[in-house]
Length: 156
Image (cartoon, rainbow, N blue to C red; front, side, top):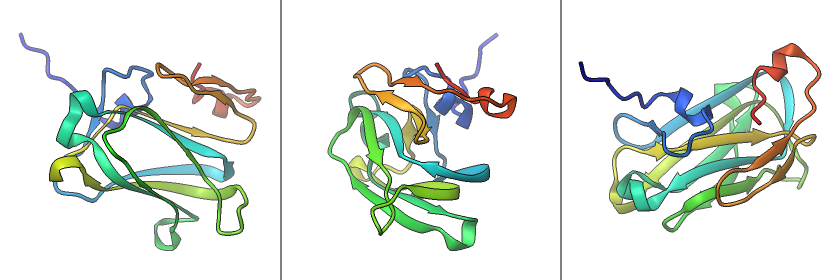
């Protein structure tokens, strides 16, 4: 019996940089993150591996924030050259203040070598009370969640 590999969204949160999420179809690709309440977001970290993924690796991405799908505004546009490891993207609004939002959208606009599908290996969204120490292998994250609802999404 052969086991089928999964390339689903759960791979973005499994703390394993060997697994990945894979899109299906032509760009752009969208990853939507919705919160139960309006949250301050300090940064987004994305793990990519150009050496293994080549044309599946994004080279242009947009981070958008808003209350719902119809009012999303771009807060960051990122152009990449063969990324390998954790990409740290600080988020600030047009007034240079921390982004406060119900929804984040990560848009993969294009890939290296005009690739069609995308591989992303990990995504981390950090709030201001998160202390992040980035290293090439894994971001070390310390969070002090108090509610059970939020503790279930804590990654250590």
